[in-house]
Length: 311
Image (cartoon, rainbow, N blue to C red):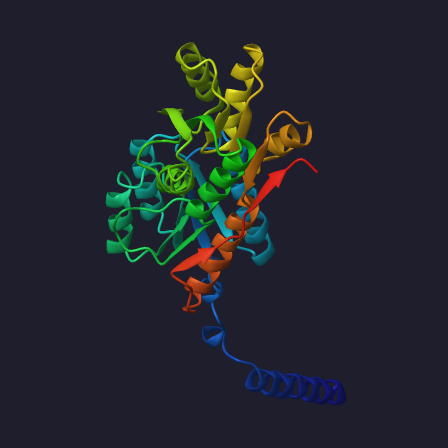
């Protein structure tokens, strides 16, 4: 019996020693890194002017694809072309404490207050496709809209043999895209003494408005020979009105969307100035990633464009 008790004592002693050695070799629980200290996931707010336009759907998809690639969270809001709504949405993103805001403004002046509020909250802002008039913006990512307008103007002047009547369908008043595309277009067309812009009206980057505005213009200008629309949606709307009126007119759009490119290849539209909205969205999130890492980014990041004509 004594032997059994002695053996039990030895076993207990051995277990105690193992416990002490194991304990000395491990870190106390208090020193273990809490889960909350793990690397924080990048959260990016993407405030778009509208998702009722394939161009901005592509922009969102490009941003989402890259966000998924790097494991970032993308919070997307759609202003439906309403500046007041977009201001509220940006304010909400600020309240959510997103790390950075990618802003595609509905109105260059109307979003200034929201940008300044983001500045006060120390949330960096990057603008996409369209700029804002004031406030601090880390970077602006867009195609050169003035250069694109010039491409359209040069193409139309050549197709008209430097003589004829043209119509300009403008985008939403107050947007930098509308202003810059129109500026580039007129930089060329206004130098052509025998080309006259007989009508210039806004159709708000909208297809149905493009059709309605074109229908109205045809009432007073039935012999128009060329149309430059500040985006493809308006160009496609104008095309519908022209086809209904059985008019063969040179139509040039801007964006390079799938519907417009198909219309060009089918010989219905003459050309479109192609942007790369998916790339703009992708570069937006890449820039957000760099800003979050305190890396230097360019104040202006250009995205290539080209004139698409029938092959």
